[in-house]
Amino acid sequence: MGNDDPVKAKLSQNVFETVKISPKLFQEEVKEQISKVFKTYSVEVTGDFPSVSASSNPFPHCLVKDFLHEADGGGADDFVKDLLDDLTQLKFHEKSNDLYKFIQTDELFLSKSRDATNISTRLKHFASLIKNHMLPWLRDVTDVCLDDDVTMFCAQYSSTDCLLCHDDQLENRCIAYVYYLTPDWLAHDGGELQLFNEVLANSGTLEPHHVVKSIVPMSNSLVFFQVSPKSFHQVAEVLSEMKTRISLTGWFHGPAISTPLPAKDPKLPVMTFIPASDGSVLSSWINPVYLSLSTQGEMQEQFVEDSEIKLNNFLLESKLDKIHGSLKLLEECRRWEMQGPPNKRHYHKLLLQPKWDQQSSGENSAAKEEIKEAINFLQTFVDVFSSEEIFLYLSNTTGLTFHPMAVDSESDDSDDDITPEKRQKRIEKKRETPGCRLDLRRWCPGSYTLIKDTDAERGEFALDVNLFFCQSEWKEEYGGYTSYIASDEAEELLTIVPANNCLSMTYRDKDAMRFVKHVNHTAPLPFYDLSAVYYE
Image (cartoon, rainbow, N blue to C red):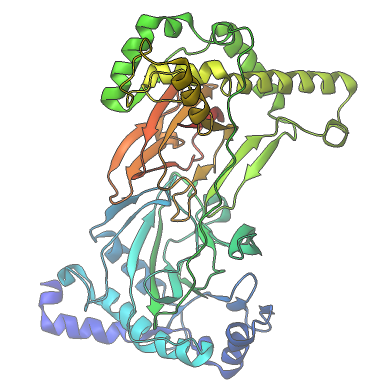
């Protein structure tokens, strides 16, 4: 009869009541040392407490090994194992967006749970320890103002799952906690809780810089940390194909704290087109199929209908091969600059105009010339996408107006009717606004972009153009795809999976947002893309 039998339930409850929080946490000397971390930001506390460590670097946090104990001083291995079995029987929901990929239960505290019938007696006992014992202890030790609101969920991370860099500032969260249950977890399995240090950005806000501490999720260990503007952390990607990282996680809440709204990111610089020279730029780079007027007309019809189009085999094979060769040559060179901060983006951008004497000091003359030739060639390639010809080409293939001589769909004047004065006025007006920004980017395991409320792209109208260079077939399961979503809902509008020599064009309105999904460790080789954004 299980828990339906009141006698068995009572006996079971009595057995569980012998499982307590580690008594070391309640020793006055331990409490005093941890209190220093949370109240005075002392740098490190370990001392004579090998199972309890705390530090304010990079922000106040504490790790408690062997968190659960039997009342007689013994371990709680059987309880932890049975609790783990109970948790695997719960109902989990897939959670996946720009920031994370894992599965999670609903709220597990009885007062908030949607389905209390599946919550085992063991789990109820653990929740009671968190609410009735850990909460008062935290109030006493940390001086953080906490109310009675405590939340708890169970999360499972399998291979390629992760939770990227964030600060947890949401819904009056004051102290975050994670209790780990998976046995025999090792550092090479991935899934560590990683803590970032921070730097002061030009906007005056704190930004994460790099990981300074990694905590391996050992079974029966508990980590808690204070939520603040500097509590940047992440769950590293799980690398093990055989193990699942299982934890009980949640927050101790408190009164709302007023924090200033973060400043919106400054608008990125935009360049105007390079005036045409001999008019043969596109024909020397682009597949002639896409240059015929009939094909451009068909492309425009499809783009107007769908607001996006993909063009396979876009570049001439001779140019494509040289681009691949140049990118391969630069793969091991110091020409790629990491783009951050990690709570917004994490990928490499090619530096096309290096200081040769400073950046090539370790290379011989022949290597320098090869590298210089490769970068100059790639610069010429990028220049194609800021040329006057490409602005006119994009106007003809999308129906948008990126060039002053493109037909303006909002004008009542035909080309035959327009006077020279009106034509010149149109040119002067249009030249003030069309522009673009361009980057050559490298995507490898660990690369991603995130959607933020402060994004400079939010609320703008633009044409996103991406031309992909893949060294092998790219699969959606690797990540690295570009996802478009509506700003007021989580539903995906469009997914663009990289494909070699494929050009994608997507019209993004003020209500659309985009991100590049985290590239996971199963990706065999990096891919590259030319990322261009055009404005009318």
